[in-house]
Each structure stands twice: as C-alpha cells, then as structure tokens.
Image 1 (tube, rainbow, N blue to C red):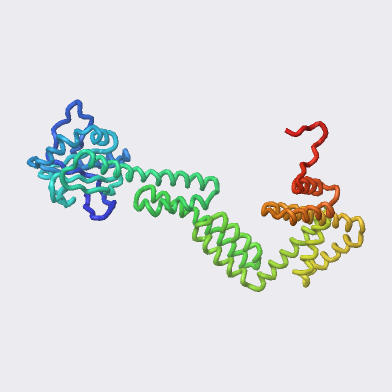
Image 2 (cartoon, rainbow, N blue to C red; image 1 turned 45 degrees about the vertical axis):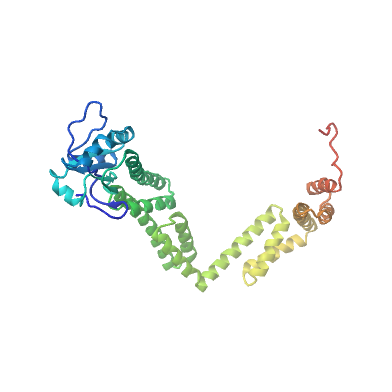
Length: 386
C-alpha cells in the first residue's frame, strides 16, 4: 500500500496517485490517455515500463474532481504527459476506501505523483490549473528518470571489473549501493562489490603471510600494489595501515635503505657502461653521502675513481657537466628576459657560450643574445626576410 509522507520523495511500496472525482467512463476515441482503474496491475505495469505513476483519488459527487477531468486533464500539455510519460490511474474513494485511507486522503481530488519504484515525489490536494500540474508532472518525471543512472553506473562498474579497473568499479558500485536501497540493482551491485572486496582481501592476506615469513620488502610491495589496484576497498584501507606500521620498524628501514643503495649503485653502473660519466659521478657521490656504512658506497667510490683516473672519461664528464650547466643558464636567461631584465639575461647567455662553445646551446644563446642587442640573427644563404 501507499503511505503518505510529509517529507520529500519518501520511499513507499506504491506509485503515484492523482485524486479526482469519479472513476471515469471509457475514454473517447479522441482521448489519448488510457486511465487505469486496477491499482495492482497499474503498479506492476509502471515497474515493468519504468514509468512514473499518477493516481487520482476522488468521488462521484466531487465538483472539483469533475472540473479537473473536464479542464486540466483535457489540456494538450497535460494529456500528452499522461499518455506517454506516466501510468495514469483513477480511483473512486467510495469504491476503494482502504486505499484512500492508506494514503490518508482528506480532500478530493488528491493527486499523488511517484516514481516507478514507488517513491512519492508530490502529494497534491485540490484542483490545479493545467500549467501548475504540468510543472509538477515534469519534475516528477525528471526525478523518476534519474533512477536510470543506477542501472547505467552498475553496467559501467561491471565493465570496469572486467577491465581490471577496480578503483573505478568500487566508486561506482558504492554509489549504487548507497542510493538503491532494496532495489534489485542495489543487490546486484552489493554482490559485485563483495566480490571485489574478496579479491582485495586475498591480496591483503598474501601480504600478511609474506610479512609473517620475514619477507618484509615483498610484503610491502604487495601492499603497495593492493592500495593502487583496489583503491576504495576496505582491504586497501587496511593495507595502508599495515604498511605504515611496517615502515616504522627499524628492520624495515634497514631493508629499505639497503634496497635504495643497491638501486642507486645499479644506476651508476649503467651510466658508466653507457658513457654518461657525469651522471655516474653524481650517483657515486650520493652513495658516499647517504650510504657510507654500506658496501655499495665502497663500490661507488671505486667506480668514481675509474672515471677520475682516466683522462678521457673525466674530460667527457666535464663536457657533460658543462652541457647541463649551459642548459640551466639558458633557462635562467629566459626567466630574466621574461622579467625584462636584459642585462642579467645577457650575462647568462654569455656564460652559455663560454661553457659549451660550438654546441647547439651556444648557437641558441647567440641567437637570443643578438635579439636582445637589437639585431636580427643572420639568415642562412638563400633565405629572405618576409
């Protein structure tokens, strides 16, 4: 049965009703509206079609019920909405007293507008002009159709699960579960969400098992992957808490430090192998400064010595350093130029030309310097100024 609510959009197990006077006679051929008089079948129809409902409750001797029928319901805008956008029902309160009582109808006509899900959007007592009823009906239809987003989000979440995009799926599913209540789509969303949570919980159990066996780095990697792949789940939140606890342990910090030293040394060796000697020296200096008590620092020192004790390698490192410094001075010159401080920009550009002569940076610095000095850069032979 329907229940009347004083608040907005109260969920009830019924559809919208419009209070009118009589149960109408069969509609004329020209009348596009087919009024339903069987409440239960109309309610089922609305659910199946996904249409909002308008139920009219009235009596045979109700003057304004007849006026509503003759005037408002004959209006083209109203009849158009009734015919295509609603499941319209008329009920005579004298023939359906239990229904009228359940709705707490006090005046005739009384109109109730609700969604296909039984959620009441408007409870209207008395006669309404066509334009005002049209407004109410459009609002009710708009609110009712917003339920479509739940089905849409559920489908999108299902696709996201199939693609392994669990953070998006979880976000969508939680929204559906929150708003759907006891609707079937809510139950389906909860089932899928529970499945994702179980997968995430399995990852969390794996991380705990690794930690219990002493494989803390591997456990932390598993936790990090879990937090990224299953963001939004309870398991991901638990993983963040567990990782914070592991990171505070002294043995964990020692392992992390060892890993960082190994990674840094590996990068330094690769840079040495590929001739990026300046970058290699930088990594070796970092090892010596941050990991002096570890064997990787000793290896880094030996690697740096191979560069410094070999003139060709050290010369290459110096050239690489000059190129990097020249690039920085070019950027600084641009910054000064944007501020209108040409003197400072000129000094930077001149440094570029000294640091890295005959280089692309020097050529670019010359062009910019010429512009600052008020002269156009020389054009290649065969080209003319526009």
